[in-house]
Image 1 (cartoon, rainbow, N blue to C red):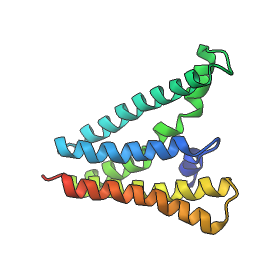
Image 2: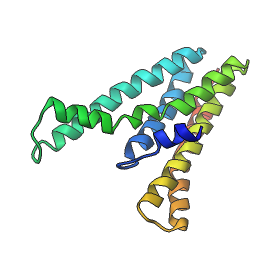
Image 3: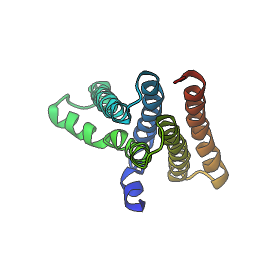
Image 4: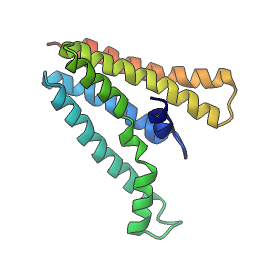
Length: 163
């Protein structure tokens, strides 16, 4: 687990892994409305993140084209730099699939996957603030702000999704 978190931890900046975690949670919550299959939810998360990752990285390349030459090499570098956006789904999807595999109901598995996303958002906010050399108090506040986003997504799922 420590190795996985080290791989996912933001290096250049935290935006990719934070966006990836928010998109993962949002997609789980939205997909839970239309299916009772954890495999369909997981596939929806992966496809959504892949599309979002490519669009985000390519937008970065185009946005920086005034300072750098637009090229396939620059696009590849940006795609690699933003890969953590896709990797952010690993823990929530592992929770989703493991719980379903252990016999948990669909609602329990999706809700726990969302709670794991909220926990990760706290961790990413804390790490991002620490890397920015913020005080521990500000780092915890940063983590709590991102956790609030995760909790809002859980609340939306619990409020809007009725099966």
